[in-house]
Each structure stands twice: as structure tokens, then as C-alpha cells.
Length: 242
Image (tube, rainbow, N blue to C red; front, side, top):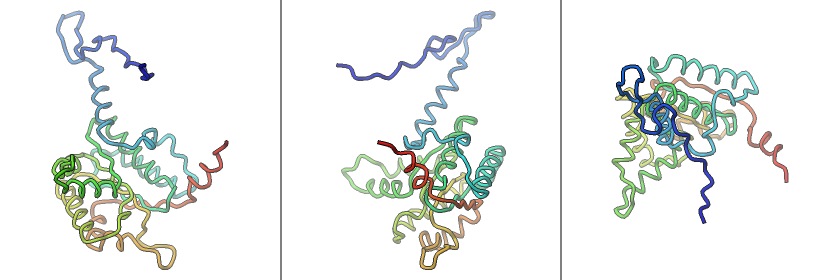
């Protein structure tokens, strides 16, 4: 039994799926206008945006306080200037304030409007993939993983500092971040760790990634601090019904 209920892709009326369009007046043939849409679709697939975030966009980000409103405004201004920007963004704040939502919205807009290559990686997942690539029986290739990270025009690195800061983690991140810095590639970071934690005893971002990398990020990124209650706790839970 065929359980595939997905709808077939609509055939373009201009090229009938061939991706080549004929000019009816001159008889000449050119790339069909639908080609750009297909390329954007492929780029979005290649960006590895998790399914949970594929619908995130600026329109659906609803600020609940002035810091969230400013964060949305800063991301919008960044997009208005892109690609004529020379710095990335570092979105910091507690869990559930929309850091990843804004980062993904930015990434999708860049890909869709410019056709630039974008890539999303969870910090811990990227490190796990790099570590597993050292295994000779692994199907992953460290060179291929790093190539994708290095070549992305815009990289979103989510949950920076989430992994325990061992020497190996610091070395791996130094290589990735310094490589993108040297190549003038834009990177969008999110992190739950602040530079000046509100509570005594909490770790700072410097504690998690080291003073040298934190210093590099000051040069690479504009810091956007977002405050607020945990959306998942107060809104999502209230909407769950049996």
C-alpha cells in the first residue's frame, strides 16, 4: 500500500517542468522564471533548519516587552542593510524569549531574498558531528562538515556555550569562529549565557567559551539582549488541552 499522501509539486505553466521557457515572439529559449523559486527551495532545504522552526518568521514573532520589540527592530534593520553589513549578531537572554525564532527568521529571509547560502547548527550538535567524524567507521566527514560551516554566507550557531567548556570544545570553536572571522563571513549566535548574569553564582558567557573567544565576538557581532518570561512555560503550557 502506498502511504505517501503528499501532494505532487505543481507543474510550472511556463516551462511544464523542464525549467526552460520559450519566448513566443522570438522563439528563443531561456531559463524559466520558476528556476529561482526552485533554487531557493533547495537552499532552504540545505540550510538544515529544524522542523520545529521552519515556520518562524518576523511576522509571527510577537514582542511582549520593549527589549523584545527592540530585538525585532534590530533584526529588521540588519536585514534592510544586508548584504552591506560587516558584523553578525549575538542574541542573548533566558530560555523562551525568542532568540532562535529571530535567528531563523533572519536566516530564511536572507536565503529567500538574496539566494545566499545559509546554514543552521545547534552548538552541541555541531560539536557532536565533528567528534563523530573522527571515528573511522563513521559516515560523517570532518572535512565536509567544516566545509559547509566555512562556506555558508550566513551561519546561525544556536545555543552557544551549551556544551561543557573543555579544552577540546574551546579549540574546535576557536577554529570555526576564527575561520569565519578571517573570511569576513557573517555569523548569528544565540546563547542563554549573559556577560553579566543577574543571579550570583550563574556562569557568564565568558565562563562558557573563554575570554579569548568572547573578545573575538565583541568584534564580530552586535549584542542584542532579550528579556522576558519563558514563552514555552507561560504560553505553550496554557494552550495544551486534552
